[in-house]
Length: 357
Ligand SMILES: *[C@@H]1O[C@H](CO)[C@@H](O)[C@H](O)[C@H]1NC(C)=O
Ligand SMILES: *[C@@H]1O[C@H](CO)[C@@H](O)[C@H](O)[C@H]1NC(C)=O
Image: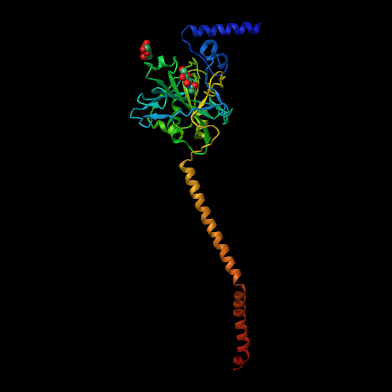
């Protein structure tokens, strides 16, 4: 009874905070955490929510899915990008000349942002999972449909209004300079509400190399109000950042404002949602693994093969030499015998008469 009463009063207070208009207050955990979102944002309880787990045994190959084509991503322009901490994520505004092709409509870029884990260096933090496996973080590049809608606010509530590219981020040895273009400025926006202008950079360098292989499905925003307006593209290939870059992303930012009690901005990912009636399409034939090699990997293979060849040549030469040597052992031994014995003989021979002379 007490529990019901307390939680009833509590949710009444929360609802009032929300209805008063000030408030789209929500968090990932706690009293206004993700399990409560649908109470205040009804669409969060819808049947086509994101993120999802992609079960590769259930996906359907669609041969009409052509490669995603970033438009203008590599023309960042001279104006700085604006990086901000909105208390839920780090977000960067993108110029309106950027867009994506290869989708059923033309979509223009709006912003990008990230989702990550809790600084324990574990592989949790991505929103989408593949066969139940999380990545360490996930980048979302948000676009709206300019063919059908006037602006992002209108598009985000409507069917086919948004297109989001999802890029899974994993840890490897190398520092990723492209991601560094964002991460290097996180220290300037530690508190919610802070903004910084950063030098513009090639946005395409944040994407994986292979844009031909992806998963496609209809879903939603992964944060309240969870509008079911998103055509999702999740690339099959992940991008790699270093361990220290991941730790920086996970530990530098606060979800609290400067004057508030400090709260780390961590675990800002939503758990996977039921697929329900939806189908996940793939642009590639599932089950066939095509690995794209990086320049570094190709160089390693070439150098490795060269070393192997040289090594083999050395071994063959050695064997041939050994065989040749074993072919003439008697001559050699005789030579040696002769060489050794000759002076002895000559000694013997020379000894007696010469010394005596
Ligand atoms: C977006 O477009 C709608 C419909 O044309 C309009 O009513 C609204 O004021 C626009 N919003 C912004 C922020 O421009
Ligand atoms: C998404 O929904 C639209 C209908 O609005 C449908 O035409 C399209 O095939 C769906 N796409 C996927 C990938 O399921």
